[in-house]
Image (cartoon, rainbow, N blue to C red; front, side, top):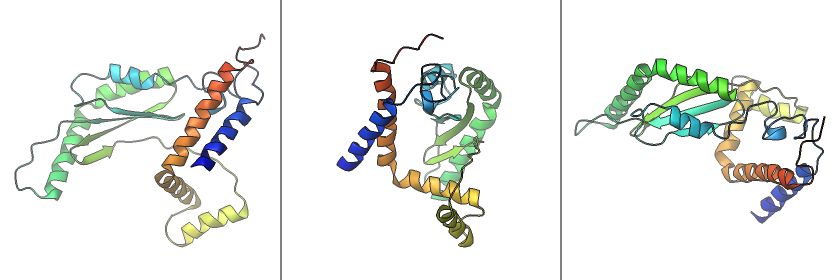
Length: 214
C-alpha cells in the first residue's frame, strides 16, 4: 500500500503543477472540479438537496445518493412486507420485489418531478432504485457512451472476451472489464479519488488559486 500512496502523492503533485485553463481552473475545465468536471454545474450539495426534497415517508432511512459527472442515482430502503412464517426464500424475495414494484408505481409522477428539478439544477440525469429486506432493484438507469482508441494488444483483450462468449461485442467487453476493475480494485480506486481531491485542494491553496483577470 505504501507504493500506491507514493504513486497517488506524485499524481497529485503533477496535476497541481499544471497550468490552469483560460478561466483559472483545470485544463479545459470550468467551475469546481476543474479538469474532472469540465463545464458541469457543481453537484457537491446534490445528496443534501435531494434528501431534503424527497417526501417524508418514502424511505425508512437516509437514502444512498451517488453522483458522478453523468448521473445521480438515488436508492432508498422501503418498508419490507410482512412475510408469513415458514415462507421460502423464493417467496420472501418475490414479496420484497412486489413491494419495490408498488413503490415504483405509486411514486412515479413525483419521482419524475424531482428528477426534472434536479436535472435542471445539476445538469445530470437522475435514476432511482429501492430495496426491501434482502432485495434491491435499480429502475431505469442512464448509460453514457464512452469513446476510446485502443492499440492492437488492447483490442485483442476485448476480442478474446467476445470470442470466448464472455461478452457480445467489443463495447460490451469494455463495460465488462470496467465492472471487473470496480469489483476488485475498490481500495486502489478510493486512493485515486482521494488523490484527485488533493489535486483540487493544492490548486486552491497555491499562488494561482485566484481566477486571472480577463
